Length: 91
Image 1 (cartoon, rainbow, N blue to C red):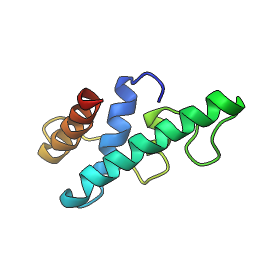
Image 2 (image 1 turned 45 degrees about the horizontal axis):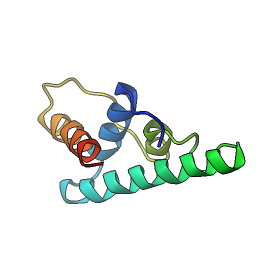
Image 3 (image 1 turned 90 degrees about the vertical axis):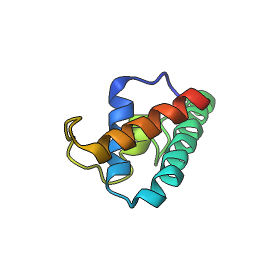
Image 4 (image 1 turned 45 degrees about the vertical axis):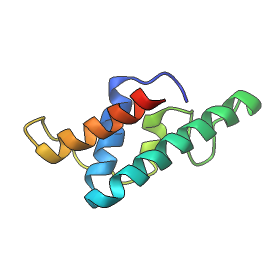
């Protein structure tokens, strides 16, 4: 996947916020895989992936519904944000 910026993390967290807590880890993993697939597609073809975009997490996350971005006083959003960061640190 492309280098990860703040907007990538917030986009994935916003997608996670709209699913049940027990489905968040799986969706997070799926978005990371889709970003990797898109990056590989762009590298090989020079074209955007038809579904997942340019290889960024933001583009892959935008395949899903995104919650309006809450502030960090929203505990569930903080959990989603942390989940994305933890997955990044395990890469």
